[in-house]
Every structure is written in structure tokens, then in C-alpha cells.
Length: 515
Image 1 (cartoon, rainbow, N blue to C red):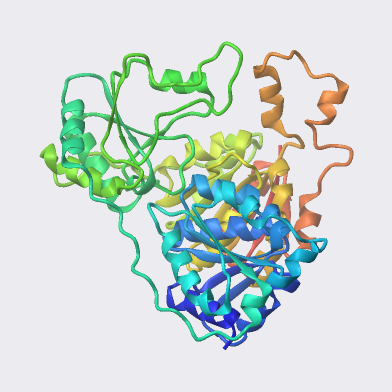
Image 2: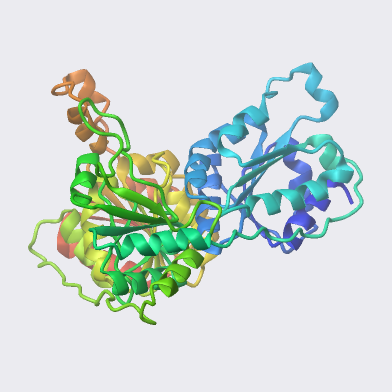
């Protein structure tokens, strides 16, 4: 057994049985080892940003890591944007990055680079194996490291000689790290803050937005009357009918200030105080109202769900939440204009129970987000780090993790071009993903931001950097070229018929919505 096979077997024994792969020469021994270990599922991605984004979607839904297989420093660098997003989502991922053989590095071959330097900004743990005999134990440590806290990125660098040289065998899995229990004093402080008679909100994140954590938050709201809020973007959130409703803060800073106007006490579990996405002339960056007291029920190294349960019990909260969202959808008339709001109503009406929604619709996302609040129960995955091009690969990874559930990707046309290779992987793996592309033929968010930063109206050179025209993108042809069936909608009737059919069918499909 060589080092590469000992690595693959160690990963599988530790529960990492899926690898999103884009290999090169230095990783060929790992590739060969996957023929020897049937339990490792390999998913080829045509761009490293797809591999890293898919690993993010998989990790968010499974609560344990997938592996990525990346080729040297440039391959890792190609995947950095979606590793940035995954870091912001606290997603567990194990990167396996090949490197030149130890004795070869001194010759400074063309692909030689500082792999650790590329990995450092996005990794919570980095290690470069030094000998084939230690590769297995290095892999076991990488898996355990990826599960620290709520999750993080562990990057294992594998010099080619440590992969091809003889090794002993796989290493046993290490015990999964556990989140610390909440501080009893912090729970008491949070209970006092919520019962002080002041205007209070409970800001939720992490595992406080799904499962038992969300139910416990509903108990707290029933006991105190506190509003339940969450950040604008969240890694994973349960919503829809039968779920405890949580209001996400809006995107722009001045809107968040409106959302929080008059709030005197903010209790936080699994989140951080809101700040503006960008700095603007004359606008605030810190968005918590002046004089508002902030109390933490849990810290980053603690489970928000466990802290919320302790807080609910400290408050003597009722056994169940008093308010759950009711199912309510309505279809627009076929003669209504097709826009993000009528499309959102159609999506809400036909969205199946248990669906997973990967949302990167950006400026076209308000309509679907509003309409689906009372749709069938589903889960919502957001763009966490702000680096566009995550929606398609995130949906791909979620569909690999949960093949029995419908995955829906809502995407703007500009951002989707960053990682459209995801469609090829969806076709190859026959993943049950429906993608809705809102085609406004522009980087619309940048047009908005151009006005917000106070530089006047865009001239012809500026407009040429904001518009996606001359030529226009044809998403039907792009999807079909990747092996995914596709259709185009310019009316409510067409979109209703196409979306309903996609929700009833299995396999990948794309619908371009012309706005």
C-alpha cells in the first residue's frame, strides 16, 4: 500500500466518502487509489471553483466534510473564492492538494508555488506531509481538524513522493471534536436581557436556524415576545410552513438600521452583530443602534442550539413555539408580467416539501425570498462570503449529499457565468437540480452600487463594464452544451408550465427567465 491509498482509506474510515475532484499529474497516485477503495465516491468537476463550492454545499447539508482533490498551488488558487465563502459558512472541508515531489521542488519547475501561502487565508488547519508513513495519520488529523467548532477548512498538502512511496496502512479515525457547553452565567445574562422590559431581539445563526435550535428559539419568542432575526445571509436555514418564522436582516446598511430601529437589547446566539457589507461615504458601518446592549447567549466555539435550549429552560418557556408559519401561496395570472415577484409566486406554489434552495439570485432574489416564506417547508442556503459564483456548485454539492430531495438553484445570469461548468457535473451525475437563471443581462447589483458610492451616472465606458450585452448570453444553449435540458420563459404562463414540469421530473434542468 502506498501513501495515497493509505490516505484514501483513512478518509473513508473517518466518514469522508465523497471527493470533488480536479486532479493533475501530481495527484495521479491518489486517482489510482480510488480504484482500490470502492467506498470513495469521486465527482469530477471541470473547474476547481466548482469542486470547492460543491464541497461547501455537501458539508452544509451533511454536517461532515467532503474532500476536494486539487492540483498544486494554481489549482488551489482557482478554488479560493468558494473556499472563502465556505470559510464564512463554517463548513467542514478537507482539501487534498498535490505538490511536487520533495526532491523536485529545488528545481523550481514551472508549477512550483507556495501552496501553503495560497491555503492560509481560507484554512483553519494546514499541514504538508513529509513522509508516506505519516500520510494516514495526517489525514486523520485533517478530518478531525475540519470538524473543530462549527466546521472549518483543513488543507492537507501531499507531495507526490509521499503519495507513491510505501506506507503502512490507514490510520484510525480520531474522535470528533465537541462544541463547548454554553456558559451558565451567559445564559442567565441573556435571560435577564430578554425579560428586562426593553425592546429586544434575538439574533440567530449557525445551528440556531434549523432543527431543534430553531424550535428552541420559537419557545423563547413565545416566552418573551422578542423578535427573531438572522443575518442577511445564513449557511443553512429552515423556513416555510410549519417552521418558526425568522426575519432576515436586509442587505443595505440603512435598511438594517431601519430593521433595528428602537431596539434596546440584542441577544445573540450563533451570529455576530450586523455590519455594512461595504463602506459608503457618509454611511455607518456598525449597524447596531447606539445604546443597544449586546448580550451573547453563545460564542463561536459553542452550539447555538444547546445555548437556546438552556435559555428557553432558564426562562421557563412553554414546551412548544406559539407561532409557526402557515402554508399560503397564490399563483399570478398567466397574463401578468413576468418578473422576479411573479416568478417567485410560481416558485413558492410548486416548491416541493423538503426542497433545498441554493440562492444567488442577488437583485432578483427579493421576490422568491418573500413568496417562499409560507411555501412548503424547505431549507435555504445563502451566499455567505459575498464572492459570486457559488450558487450553482453549492446546489451541486447539496444534491450529491441529499439525492432524495429536490434541489433548486436561483441565480443571476452574471454570477452563474463564473461556475457554469457545474451544469456538466450535474448532467454527468444526473443530479436532481433545477436551476432558474434570472436573465437581466447585467451585473445589476453593480449598477445599484455605482449610484450608492456617489460617483454620479455611468458613462459609456462604465456601462460597458456593468452590462452583459453585445453579445447576449443564451442560457438554453449554454446548458444544452453542458448536457442539461433547458427552456426559456418570457411570460408567466411559460414559466409556470416549465417550472411545474421541472418540479415533477427528476434530473437536471435549467429555466432561463427573461426579465
